[in-house]
Image (cartoon, rainbow, N blue to C red):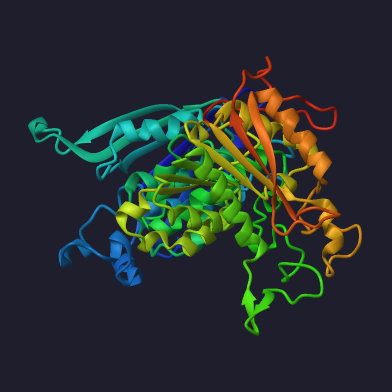
Length: 533
């Protein structure tokens, strides 16, 4: 198994700098032990104008079988002889990827202490791989797959299918490809990380068991390039040996990282799943006052169970959706899926889209809804997707109604105009239902200290006048009519605990194509694919 890396240079920037980048001296032949054989690093040519480093991996097929323990292609052959007669010693695969990490671990980190700054600069690179298995397995393998994987990363790709036997061309092509990659814009550390991921992807198999920690390895090696790769799903699926649970986890984490980068925030700030039961209630109690939570006036001497505020809120939302005749509903900021579960119980609702920025919340929603066990016809009605509501998203268009249930108060106020535009300006459902706490009612919560908001993640809470003013301004801006309704027991002095706004398309929106920006935080919008501009 063989691979070479070449670079060119000048007297001022000699090609032999490759030795500093790889941390391997051009004047020495070095040997490294691996779990399945030996790796040798040497330089066929080392000069100021051209330098080539070669990695030769000598695989012991018997050690491969003994250490395989029945896992992967090396240890799980189709027949006994294949344990000892196979392509593993010759074709670049996950074995070479593991050897890269073993031999060039420091180079892959982009560290070069002896020449500070050298590893940060790209230089002309040419990588040759004489034999790489490119088995598509129904996913379009061969030279075409090589181009799909490497060209988006800035490589010029020359990939040629190797014939089964050059003496008998009528036999056709093998599944092996001769690859040469050339680039002047890719750093060496990035090139090694990309090879570490993409060699097993091309092969479509690994010589070892794919455990959950492989997700962490994939995301670490893919940092900076995998999140935006057009073949992200293919890469994750094949790298993780088609283990669907691991693939789903990897894609969710990649999307979360992309959203965090687009918002210039930390992942932990984005993935802050909020319990549905905590969203507008400061404690376990659903109603304030001396009356015990969960009990109402006695009838015939027995206390009657009253619905919680969360249940009353969901019922008010369902009533508004019935009023507007909505059949296709988008639950924006769906959290752990409480409202989605209620929507699916209504036969008039034909489609539900749940959107949340938190991958943890979506995973919890899928578990609560039991999506994997749901009958096929029922499962076809619901879809959960990850997305940020402050960016326009083509997936949100075409719905009869959108719901923002206890969502807006979780945004910083300077970012609220971006949500307004993304939902009412760009997606433009026929109706939008918004609920949010009524700040005036907080004095009735005995467990809530004075001046505090109901949940630690709330960035603001509005009184009734503030909410009405906001709703009327948004309706006027985007061509909707709006009515404000109380949710929950209405106090004669401070009003209801929750307030609801029902927007319906009714007028021509004011002439504006972008949400208003603020001096504190300019509001960005995105094209239909959801990517930030």
